[in-house]
Amino acid sequence: MRLLPLLLLVTAITSSGSAATQAVGIQRVAWLQGCWEIVSAERTIEEQWMTPRGKSMVGISRTVRGDSLVTYELVVLREQGDQLAYEAHPAGQPSAVFLSRTVSDSSVVFENLEHDFPQRIGYQRNGPNALLAWIEGTQQGQVRRTEFPYRRASCAG
Image (spheres, helix red, strand yellow):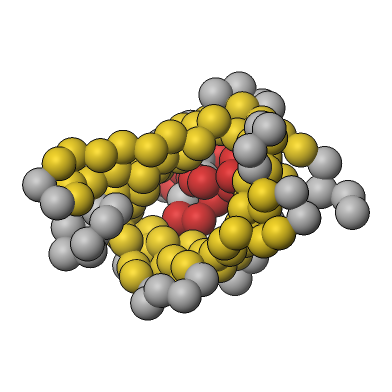
């Protein structure tokens, strides 16, 4: 009879240990955190994601040409039930919410089929220093996809 309580204790410790090693919710996309940029002769695009906290992450981006701000956006990424919600607040446009369609340890795709453009937003981690972001959807009857190949950048200054 003493074996049963010990067996239950071992089972509880084993199952809680395996759950702790597998990321859930917002932690599944913690690899987004940090600073990312695309630098070209025409423009610089910067994107910065805060550390997951309070079941959310906050991201900001800006695009600059020379010494002029072209556009900016604030994004709140949060847990919503068993999905992640990507709440975009782009400059000069109404906000929109996209729900996660797929989430893995190296990629995430959000979708809102009711949105004008884009209908899908995705991120794919390609190693520790590369991140491919993309937007995709149908616009004026044409399927369109724009990719943003980011490199990790310093968050200082």
